[in-house]
Each structure stands twice: as structure tokens, then as C-alpha cells.
Image 1 (cartoon, helix red, strand yellow):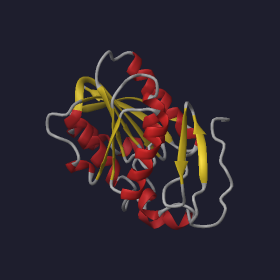
Image 2 (cartoon, rainbow, N blue to C red):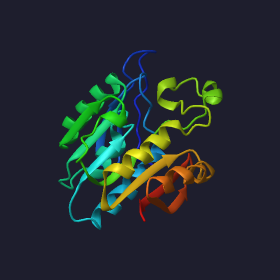
Image 3 (cartoon, rainbow, N blue to C red):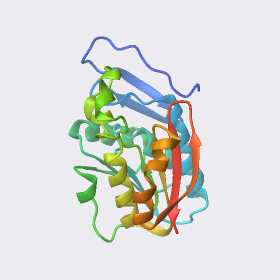
Length: 215
């Protein structure tokens, strides 16, 4: 893909520059995940879903620097709520939203406590850590907090599905990113318990996407 142009880092620990991610310009550094070019597919799928849903806000879980959610809603006029547990990532997401001219409410903390009970969303975008704890050393350039998904890699993914089950509108959808379609299949017990179904999965160069909706 040609959407991603990364400046060379001046040195370790210094800001690594900016990337063009679809329609938005994203700032990032060594303390967050570098935006992967293939993840623009998640933003595009979410944006496609928005075209068929006339009203409703958008929620991004595990937002990091905010690039996927911002690319999905840019120019649509949709309000975006972004949640991440890392304060530095949230600071970057706020700055990136200002640069993109997107109305984004960035909330720092556990996703299970970040939303009011009555908040509903037409589209939920989730990019949780999905690397099993035992495998994180294979990715030395990535912050551990941003990739460690627990023993089977799905701890945060389960939370994302549970949050979506509580906060999707009746016709809303969850666009979930994981490492493989096999991981998506392992979530089925949680998906069903939350009153959702997996409508479609897609394999990408660096991972997989699943589209979930209400039964």
C-alpha cells in the first residue's frame, strides 16, 4: 500500500515522525505502535458500514494513536469516541484528532469502565493486542503493553466483544482486528454469549478482520 510514508527516526526514544494514513496525518513515537499500512483496511470497512447506517456515533477501542478510527470517520461528520488505557497514546490520539479536524472524545482507562450505560454506537472499531504473552519477545520493536493479549492472545479481544455487545445500536456492527481468522473463530463462545454473530471474516497481509453484528 502507498498510504503510509514514515519519516526516519532521529534516534531511539525520539518522536519517529508522521505518517499519511488514508485521509489523515498521524503523529506517533516509540511509545506506541507504528501504524501498519495494512490496517487501513479496517478503517475502510468501518467507513463502508457507516454509509449504510444513517445515524450514530463511532467507538474505537484500544485506539492507540487513533489512526484507524480517525481514518474511518474523517469527513463523515460522525462523532468519534476513542478509548485506550495508555495515557501517552491518548495524548497522541487527541493531537491527531485536532490535526484531522475530527470531533473525537478520547477517554483514558479500562474500556469496561470508559462508557456510560446508555451510550450506543452505530460502529465499534476494535484493534486489541492479540499476541500471546509467550510470543511478545518476537516483536522487540513494539511496546509490550500494545501487543500482549494474555495467555492465548484474546484477553482484550473478549473485552472488546463484551463492550460492543452492551453498546451497539440494534443495527450496529463491530469491526474487529485480530492476528488470524483462527483467532476470530476462537472468540465464538464470547461472541454468542454477548448476543452477537460473526457475519464475515477477511484475511489480510498482516492479520484478519471480523465483522460482528446483533443476531
